[in-house]
Length: 293
Image (cartoon, rainbow, N blue to C red):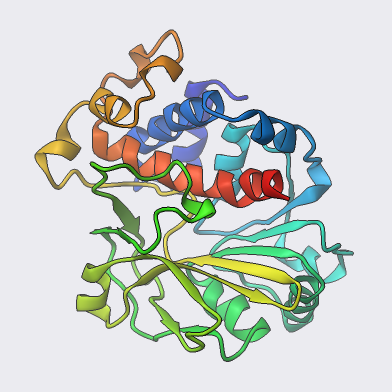
């Protein structure tokens, strides 16, 4: 795993001034806690993952691969133009970072891949560039782009396996939504399961869903308007402005901390909660789901 200084400098270099060092460090600490909390089944499932099992399509706006790297989950990073020529198998997980700019041949391949049993994870603009095109009539963007903002998130089903370990009684989750993100409209209510919502998004843009999942053929699709790597957050309450140690105590993770936490002294509960929940969901989507098979 990369050292903290390498991860922070790399994150800031790739994304520019809008990436806060606080969030880069928050992801580092969040992942340390996640890895220390894994069950035996999760450790076994993670150990069984090979690089070819997880394919990540590079994106200009989201970088799920950075979080996977910290989680020490092996993956193969590919460019959008390479996808059309790849041989996909149903046992694989395909992650398409925002914006998901792939050609029609790749879209057709993705649809067949999921139909045969593959798992697809997408973020933000990929709803229009991939999901709408590959799976018409299920979800779509509502053509009302968001502002660059941090919004309160509500959970529809905290007991869902994808959300395992993410929420507790004191949770008050705020996630970053990048400017010009695409709100999610659910078309097929019977097929789509809404996992996370936001009343703020609904009030401003007419749609509440933040994260949704649905099945297609033998496979499944998970889509989030939020990015898998969130580059900023905003401490909106006194709780969020408190030290990150408050959040660690809330989730009962004090015993899971690394020995040296001096690099994290400037982090807040808001930083760590946003990073921990988003990283844990990505972990659950890959490792947790495999551990349940």
